[in-house]
Image 1: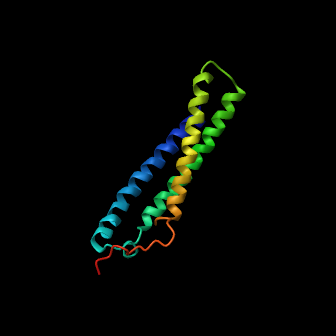
Image 2: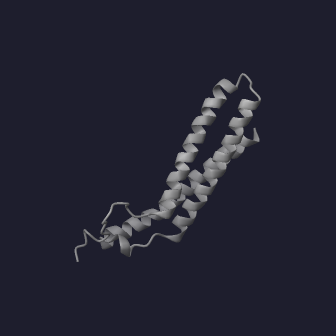
Image 3: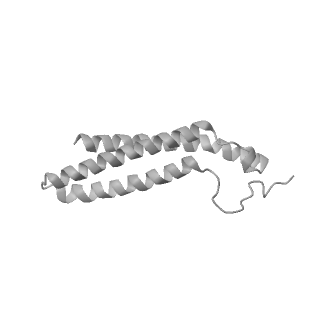
Length: 123
């Protein structure tokens, strides 16, 4: 059961990091609205740090959920009929969320080819 506690704690901490990063990122969107140019509004360093921390926490949650899944298969019980599907869903959710966080940490700008960050500039 320590694996379940670790998974819940790390997933919760990762969500908290994302909420804080999104709150900090909102200030950048206000700057973009003022200047009409994405490149003139830098991404705050704390947003990148919090997204990276959340990615690491989600990796820890995925590893602990994988350990829990192995333990559930190794030592079957009556609770396994409910615990195995819930753990599998949690593992998939954690991994997908981790990839999204990692992508957001690396690339904050739109991925379209030929994107002009100042296309709607009034200057």
